[in-house]
Image 1: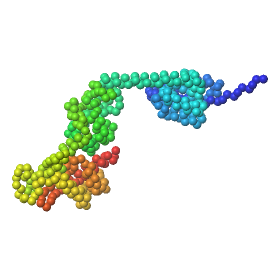
Image 2 (image 1 turned 90 degrees about the vertical axis):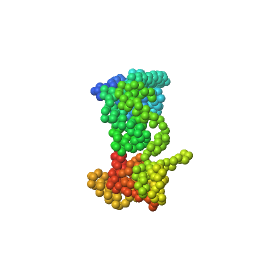
Image 3 (image 1 turned 180 degrees about the vertical axis):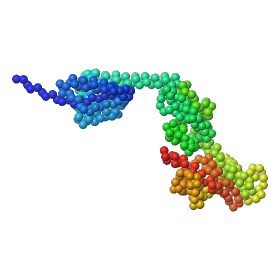
Image 4 (image 1 turned 30 degrees about the vertical axis):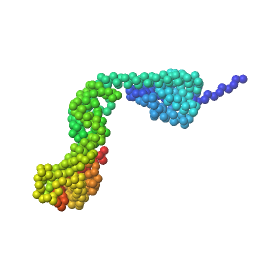
Amino acid sequence: MEQPSKPIRRQRCAIYTRKSSEEGLEQEFNSLHAQREACEAYIASQRSEGWVLVRDQYDDGGISGGTLERPGLNQLLADIEDGLIDVVVVYKIDRLSRSLMDFSKLVEVFDRNGVTFVSVTQSFNTTTSMGRLTLNILLSFAQFEREVTAERIRDKVKASRMKGMWMGGYVPLGYDVRDRKLIMNAEEAASVRMVFERFVETGSATALARELRSQGFRSKQGTLIDKGYLYRLLNNRVYRGEAVHKGKAYPGEHDAIIEARLWDQVHTILSESPRKRAGNSRTQSSALLKGLIFTATGAAMTPSSTKKGARRYRYYVSMDVIRNREPDEADIPRRLAADTVEAAVVNELRRVMRTPETTAQVLAHMAREGHEIADADVISALERFHDLWGQLFPAEQARIVQLLVRRITVTAQGLVIDMRTDGISGVMRDMMMPRKQEAAE
């Protein structure tokens, strides 16, 4: 008597397809379709074994096999963990992974959930020891192929760079790309030269970045620049007409924007430590009250300094002293400590800024000029003048004092400060506008 045949167990099959590049994916019949068609035919040939194709599709187009972070693969693994799949079918094992280590992780997931892995073009079964050996051999070759391909690409990029060719990436300010070549943009190139020239003049990336932001200077991508962007621009050898690969420069196919002399001047400054450059910048800044301070007899007081040990002391000295003249009034101070007199003037500016009279004058002037700044913002800026002043560089502080102060007279009783009240509105507008632009970013 014949034994009844054992019922065939239904095997739910999922097809996984992958293509590393996006090239050709827009075609009506592409590589992913070809892989799926071959896998569907194989599943159909195993119908007698109970193989059936699940409806869900697991595809990753334009994603490398060197990573497991793929949407289609992640969905496949999630469905395996949920017990929805019995067999994973691929056209070739490197479609699933090119990394031996990554593939071992996938096989762990398959084994834990009782899932079989099948390659249509490389017939083996991962449930047998021989199948695992074959799999490891094939994966080793797949990883070897991937590494060789990567080396070949790196060699090609290096060879192209050595010929001075543009190999893509962010297009630097000052150039446009046409026919895969860098072409100089005359307007932007002029801006780049201006940045290099201003850096030579200021010697400070921090001060220059602040100045350029206040002027609304923007990068190629349209964002206001910061100090980090400024350093990258000043160190970009593309502006010398060179192509760089792994720190080594080669003559480029494109035209240079910055001539050798200007480049050398900038990099001589950059070779100094930031602390030393900051010290130089402070030393070169004009005295806060230069050209504004006089004695009661009308003699100008000029900035001067002396050095004792490592410390420098600054003064304002009457021209009478310098020219060895006797003053008309003996009780008039002829030498003042700069820090003391400057602090007194700044404190007076801060006091004046907070008075109701000043607030009314500035609001009225802003209204007449038609500036689109809210009254509340103007009042807040006047109240915060103390904080805003502390954020300015010495050269900026000196410029503002020149706008706000007409004359400072030194008398026996103290200082007489003649203010330019008409300049307060312009100063506040200049101090507020850069911050409004930053807030809009």
